[in-house]
Image (cartoon, rainbow, N blue to C red; front, side, top):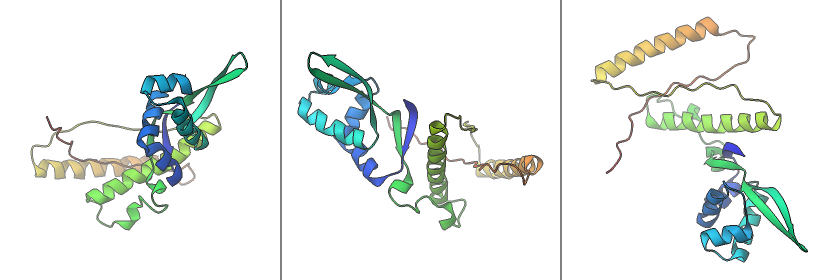
Amino acid sequence: MQDVEVIESAATAAVALDPVRARLLGELVVPASAAGLAARVGIPRQKVNYHLRALETHGLVQLSEERRHGGITERVLQASAASYVVSPAAVNPSAASPDANPDHLSAGYLVALAGRIVREVGGLARRAGASGKRLPTLAIDTTIGFRSAADRAAFADDLTSAVLDLAARYHHSDGRPHRLVVAAHPIPVEEP
């Protein structure tokens, strides 16, 4: 089971986003048969089977094992991933193109960058997993408090200078290109 699977297809996204199927996917982090799942979620087994076939057709669940009970074979299924993210490409193939937004300080540009990361890393992770390789990635996530807009602007200038200096120092035109994205946004205030 993968940690996270990026859904690229509109049809697969529609299947995964159906409320009943989304609930079944959540339950199938632990392998279960249709009968066992039906008992856990309180939905008739026939209806669970119908939804499981749709999830299996789209690769969202996979066969974990088969158990034989007399002349009956019980199929035990498991979700293909612990969680799912829908790529912007599932909505529109040209979605999440930061090039379409010239305002690099806008929220729209940042969202497009995030969408491109989901689309690109999802595809790279899928190919790496299929070949049995590990995808080389790096992520830094931290929190910083700015006392003023001037502090935030000065930090942005210093960060830009440092990143450009590091990129110039380690960039080799004959090396494998990597995309580097540095982003900052206010942390949402949670409603009580």
